[in-house]
Every structure is written in C-alpha cells, then in structure tokens.
Length: 215
Image 1 (cartoon, rainbow, N blue to C red):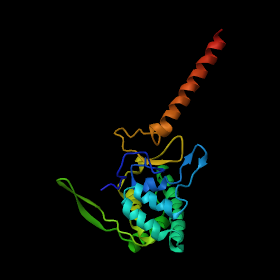
Image 2 (tube, rainbow, N blue to C red):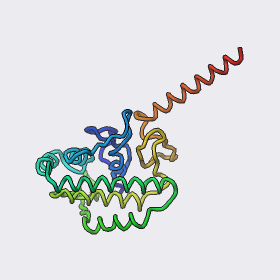
Image 3 (spheres, helix red, strand yellow):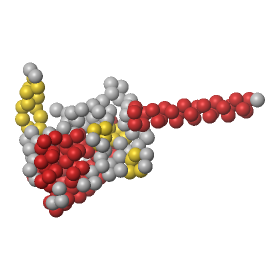
Image 4 (tube, helix red, strand yellow):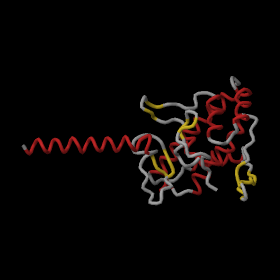
C-alpha cells in the first residue's frame, strides 16, 4: 500500500507535492526556491496546514488542532524534533540515492518511533471498493509521529532505492514512477522547462559562435 499524497497538484496551500510519496513530500518541506532555501514548516500553524494539504487531516480537524496547539510549548518542542528528524531522513535518502544502505542508527531510531507511536489502519469504503488506509487520529502533537514514521518505514523498506531521485536542478527528492525510470527533475513546471530553456540557450550560443568562426 504505497503511502502517496491524495492529490496530483504540485503546490497546495504553499506546500510542494511532487515526491509521489508522503515521506518524500515531508522531506521536501525545505526546498530551495529562486530566493534560496525555504523552510515551509516554520511554526506549528504551518505544520497543521501541511497535514491538511497532504490529506492526513480534514480542514475542520486541522482548524481545531491549530487553535489547540498554537503557542503551546509541547507543540513547539515536537516541531523542533520533527525538523531534526527530517534532516536525518534527508541524509538517509541521499545515501540510498548514492547506492548505500540505511545506517543502523537511523533504523534503530525509526523502530523506536514505530514502537512508541504505532499506526492504526482501517478499511475505508471507496465506492464499490474497500481500501486499507491509515486511520490517523491525533490529539497531542506527538501523535503526528505515527503517520510520518510509518511512511518513512514504507519508503525505506518497500520501494526500490534506484527509483529514489534528486531533481537535477534543485534539492527536491522524488520517487520516479515513470515507466522507463527516466524522470530527471521534480516537475516540468518547476524545473523541467527551466532546464530545457537553459539547454536551448546553450545550443543557440554554441551555434552562434560556430557561425562566427566560420566567417
């Protein structure tokens, strides 16, 4: 059961969703935009908005939690730990992209999180089908560990490392689900067109120099 974002849109409420996997969309909450690195989860309100944008929370539940968690020391402390974990995850994804295995220390940390914050799954009716999905219920900020840890464990255990990629033009990571496995950038709209335009301009300049030398 791949843990994917529930919408194909690239930007939702200011958050980037091009990773094809919840764990990678979480990782991509610190992208490098035109003006430099951007922290998309600077505070607890932003975290709740991301949970809603990813489809893990309804808008109504997110609104209630934002009101409950804002300016609480527990939520602020949790967010600090979550962002530190995100950067350790980034290091592990980069290792896998380079062909190395996940470190034993990170596996132990992840197993500890899974034990402390087990994910609950439930059957959900979708039309005439039944689908098995995480039943995400949260009251305390620490409850957010359950879907995050489960998604990371699924990413590192069930998906081929060779399909984990970093965009050739930015720091965004994604799961390449293309048939040929040849995806090179985070998206055509964000970086693909930029790379193609740059390549075209380079060829144009090279052709111009060649013509001038031939005169």
